[in-house]
Every structure is written in structure tokens, then in C-alpha cells.
Length: 169
Image (tube, rainbow, N blue to C red; front, side):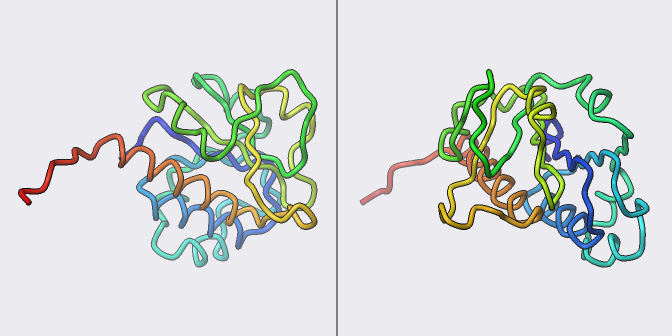
């Protein structure tokens, strides 16, 4: 449905998380998964099993060895991070995503489970997004952070499509 939006998993480490991310992508009517240098063999049976009905997302996923080629046709890259980065990149809040022009080709970049994105990987971004969470425990599971972002965008895009009419009362 929203063919101009991609979700990029950079060096994902667990098959179960990759599958759960594919499921989250499909849950909210997205279809584009990009996987960069996955640790497990891609695809594999665990990925397919945990995708629960999102097998076509896995089958159509593009796989790259490095990040640069995956960014070629994008207008905007938004990276997710739990840590504040004092880089020359704009910070955007989850509730500010409605300011983004979703007619452009946009990708959301998610880092590896153990370490998140490096400063170098963040440097490719137009924006850095931090999901609000407990300040003493900011680390979110890869698939959980992806589903929060996917649901937020889905909601924004559906609100923009909806036409509200006055009730007859």
C-alpha cells in the first residue's frame, strides 16, 4: 500500500527479530524490507516462521552487504537510536513525524540488537528519531521499535487520507 516507505535492518543478529519485523511491516500495510549484512543466513526457517504470514515481505526483501547501496534511491533517511547523538543531523520526535513529506521515498534505519547504530551509520541520515521510553531503560527490542514507528506512520498516513464529515445532529 505505502510503496515509497522502506524499513532497513542494519546487521540484524537474530532470525526471530527479522521475522517479527517483517510481520510488523505487513501489520501496518507496508511492504519494503531491506536487510544489510544479516548475521543469520537470510532467509531461513526461523525468519519465515516468526514472520507469521508475512512470507512475501521476506521473499521480496532486498539484501545488501553494506549500507551505501541501500540508500541510493532515497529522498530521506530517518535513523532510530536510543542514545542522543550530537551529530550534525536533525533530531525528530515520534509525534513530529507528521511534518515529513510521505510522498517522498523514505526509509527508517534500525541498528543491530546488541549495539544499535554507529555514529558513521547515523551520518547518512537526514533525521535521528528517538522513541520516548523509560530514561533508565531505553533499549527497545528491534521488532518493537520497528512496530512503534510503523504504527505511527500508518496512523499519520490514514489520518491524512480520512475525510471527516459533520454529523447530522
